[in-house]
Length: 57
Figure 1 (spheres, rainbow, N blue to C red):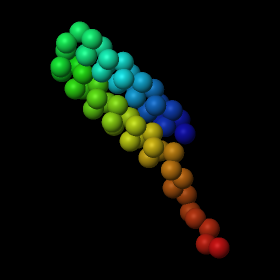
Figure 2 (cartoon, rainbow, N blue to C red):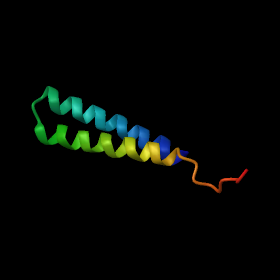
Figure 3 (tube, one colour):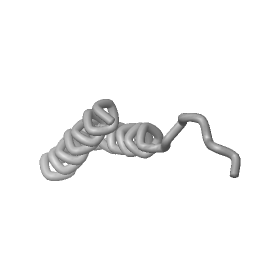
């Protein structure tokens, strides 16, 4: 759960970088910001999936 919360904060940083790049016409910064948002959201969703053993009913 710690890694998922860390990935969520990384996603927020990516959102900040994307908005910063769009406001100041920095295409590289906004491109990397979008990539960080996608990677962070993917990691957050992946880390929150329970991967333990499933009990068969």
